[in-house]
Image 1 (spheres, rainbow, N blue to C red):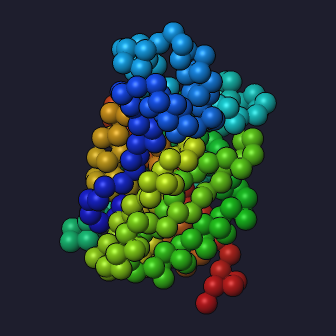
Image 2 (cartoon, rainbow, N blue to C red; image 1 turned 60 degrees about the horizontal axis):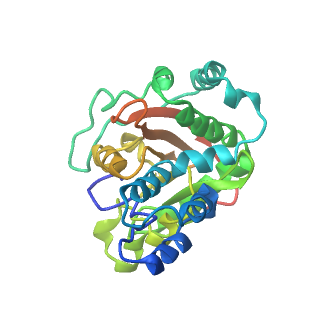
Length: 292
């Protein structure tokens, strides 16, 4: 979110019902099989009352850990994922070799600061959880692929043309260890109000899909360099959703100039802290041959 506060993220994938067994069946239907919650509920449905505290705690625990379950169910046999120290070293080595751009402006009316607004340094990698670093590693691996960065370039072009909201979506898996940036039109697009061109609101339908992270773009123009990274609003919204989830991740993509963008990781894992960390993942280029 580049400029102002809107409601975004985590509308609540699952609903807890408290009426009768018919409602229990409806709840099962609304739970994603990727998390194995459905199997767990079916196994315990005869022994737990829907009104019991154990039942409600079971649903809550499964829901809070759904990102971790989806992530680890889609990792392959790469040994780096079982060696936390090696994973950290690999990420830091990669980021040390990158050029970086840091956010120096919070909202449109603010003046540009001479220093970054946040600590975005990669030394913070050692302060993240293993799951956070797994997600960052998957992103860094994908960014080595020109087809992946060119896809981001296309999304930047779409965002520049879109005058009614920012663009964004979710990050899921297309294969083991292969992530996909699933573009999702903002609900704000339908309002056709240019005041919203600086905000992104994911639809409830898209938000209910399995994912390891969200993403949104800062690309109302080619040069959004002062906004390279999350705003204070982005941070506040992300941390607020700890009420429902233990692990929350987002990537912010900022257009620096035609053919170049910056990407930041913003995330929090409650096993480490209730305060999010921002890691600048570097500047990347994309092909502009077919861009007018």
